Amino acid sequence: MVYLAVYPILNALFGVDLLALGIYLPMLVVEPMLIYRFGRVQETMQKAASKGLRITLGYVLLLLLLGCVREWMALGTVFGLPLLSRPVLPMAGMPAGGFIVLGILCAIWRALAQHRKIT
Image 1 (spheres, rainbow, N blue to C red):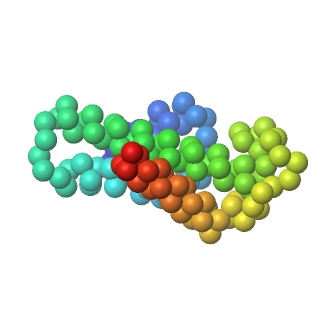
Image 2: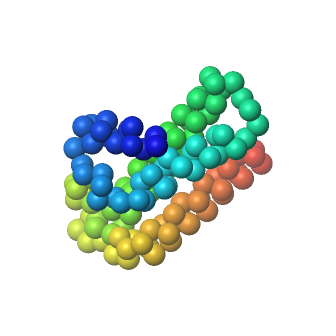
């Protein structure tokens, strides 16, 4: 429902045919966010909106970082700008490679968080 209301805005902003993403965009972005927010203990509207916005922005930043790392590893470019003469890990462009890159990024994040807790 929320996805249908937001679709025209996203299409106008990004000029990309979001229908090409099929069911994956609403399934990955909208539904889990809403279920997570409403499944919790009742909060004030302002607090729920603030937390929902922070979760969404974090998710967007994660997707941006993951996309940049995958492009860099698979093609040697970032946003189409060449950085390397040849790809580091061509498999990163495939779905399985994306999960591997995501796992590596999560491991790095956890190691940094653990290091920060210790110090």
